[in-house]
Length: 341
Ligand code: UDP
Ligand code: MG
Image 1: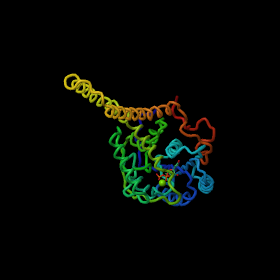
Image 2: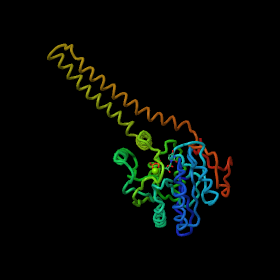
Image 3: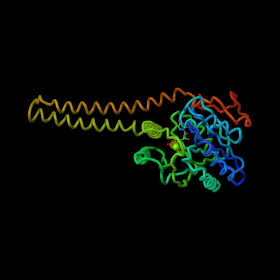
Image 4: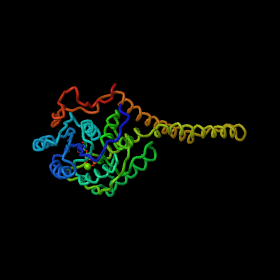
């Protein structure tokens, strides 16, 4: 565990690693790389692009290999199956060696042109420069409003603030990446992880473009599960609130019981009809108890996932890492399992 992560000087020449997760992006790769590379060249001659093929079912990998052959700065991590964007990013971070690391979507929704501005901010002394979306082009009204609602809610309950309308596109100093590598959790809610590590952060604004080609792999069900991950990994409120709801209901029932008893004993005597009110109370409490159990279940399921301690991802092939002394099945590989158990 490295807890002391001191700042290194930033006026010398530096190296830059781009981390690009790719899932079925065959049609975007060439355009993406041809827009990205000139900008990187302008910023530093010492760059590399780590492309993670996240179990694509199209020709993404073949396209990447072609590109790697013509430019060795393009490196490929081929995961053994689809692990999801968060794990693909994690693999990229584990293998990145640049003084600055930039995760970016490969569908051109994150404009590579911003990298220059990010690097300038980094040189000014910021450790994290994240890109905040001013406008989200090409997204439906429903997506925009659910996203807005999500950010409101998560910031209301999360123990650390999470910047609104900010994706994974950002620049990170090496020490931030080293910090992130130490987080062992399976539920990698990156928006939260990025904020959790802290350091000196700043935002730059941009207009989010629609996807260049292909379609998003996020449907509403996936987004819902993604936000559940967010809530459960960065807040205990959903699980804690049940004690308070329980206390409130018990207090209310106690008062009700006393009034009822007084009424029966002193006013009216035994009153048999009461089916409706009994039913309502039973159903209401039953519902509340089930919701409480469901929330407990969410947390327990996640605890189960974490204690299994499985590797976060598995790599089946690497291209372009030989020069760094990383070869396949080499002991010195950074492995997906960073849990140290
Ligand atoms: N992605 C990935 N694995 C997945 C899904 C997506 O690596 O299982 C990559 C995808 O290729 C893209 C980025 O993550 O570069 C963002 O994905 P997408 O465009 O589908 O998400 P959105 O932009 O709609 O949030
Ligand atoms: Mg996208």
